[in-house]
Length: 526
Image (tube, rainbow, N blue to C red; front, side):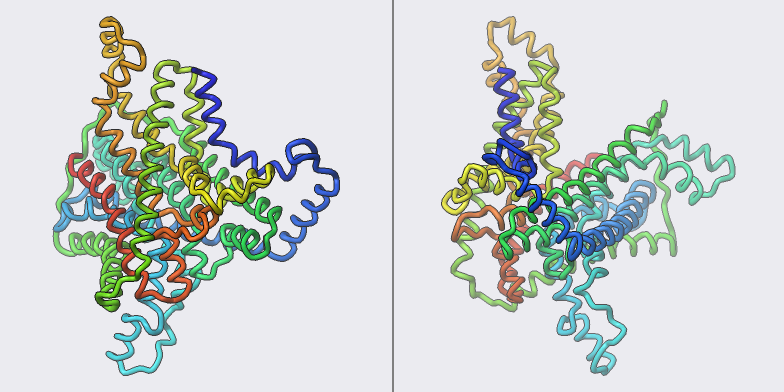
């Protein structure tokens, strides 16, 4: 049993072997000689001389800008919602997570469409002021536009985790700070913010890993990052070695962010003997207006405007529907459903195996790393591994490779949900069932699965939605003539057929609203 668990877990990490295989001196690639090593060095030197510096620079500027943006929006909204009463708070506290339903690449297309020269905003300003051009209006298809778009799309990651941290803080400590002469701003900066730092870093890490994994948005904005470089090296130039080296570079940045987040959390030792919440302060006058405006603008730019733009594009398209839409929908739903079902089964298998044998805890930690793998890195690893055995042609005739990639990428999200559900089942139930003569499999079937029903549905739901929105892995690993809603949206945007992408984009957003609705119900109970 233990060997089966370990082998199955290692099977899900074969893509990493594909990333390092081209650099092994002998054996795994059929005897790679020193000539291959020279080619690898030459390719890396070429990349560094011509493109690698630009990739590193633009990637760093992007993650610094987005990091600052999600920090301001996420922490600001979390502090206001957790500590103050003002008109509209009951709506904002759950509505501020709605931007999570909008994929980053859809947000990018809509952002540019709204703010470009022929868009409704600039057109309205020119008509109102009687001007032929707005020289002062910034170019939306730029680095600044990308930072703005990513920030409003991803700030709910920081908002969700930081809001919980602010709610769980000790209210007495804030009160003590104020009795010592600190203002509310000083108490926030010197006490509340440092105490919430682990949560803030965790939310920012999730947001930044989404930025690094993104291809559709940065490609549309024309920004040269590692993700766009990987696609260009593999699809445009057919250079496998360059694609692998760029994938390793992107993976190293992801691991660095992951390491910084884990180290920051491990070094903090804050604790509190009191869990009393500080009563929310009712804001009046201009302070209530400022709180409403800050939260309202975050919701407006993060969800309401993109949703309005989608509906407007759909209205412009009229009643005509692309005849391929049903194929896109069928492909998306089928692979999402199969992946969700398999991920739930595997999550139950791994989580229950660890429950029976806690020494296997390392397996679940290893599987949790899969979510940190960007789709482009994962795909290059799989393609490289298949090429070792001359089996890369599989991706052109079968969807199994694509489903495997989805499992590696998203299994951790379902595993966390199942583990949380199992943790709520006391070991005494297992003991009582064993006394009644049930073996381990029977206990799982008759006791745990019925009690885990809600957790299993939640786990499958989150994986289903993640697969529906996934773009980089689908672009690289899909079979011939197999387009999903995400791929169709990207291709239509690349062709500047924005009106036609309204229906597939709106479908993805509506599906993404399902887990947001689940989260909103959880928030309403806190």
